[in-house]
Length: 59
Image (tube, rainbow, N blue to C red; front, top):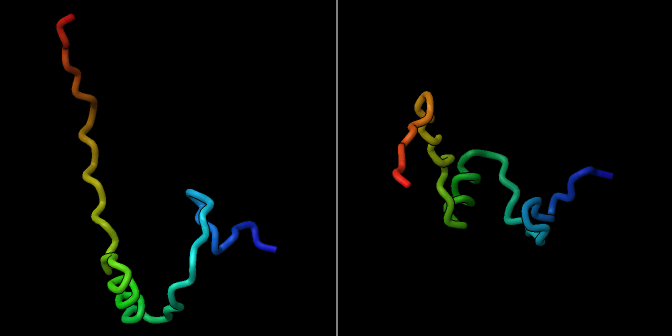
């Protein structure tokens, strides 16, 4: 038995469905385009600046 249920969403516990089995990059790109996702991962967030900006607020 596996420790992870493959067809259950780990975030919401809702059911997931198998869309397609993709073995090569062209098929992966096509499947992602078909379901409205980009072929590339989203860009990495910018690094946070060193230190924290402190603002003085008047009471």
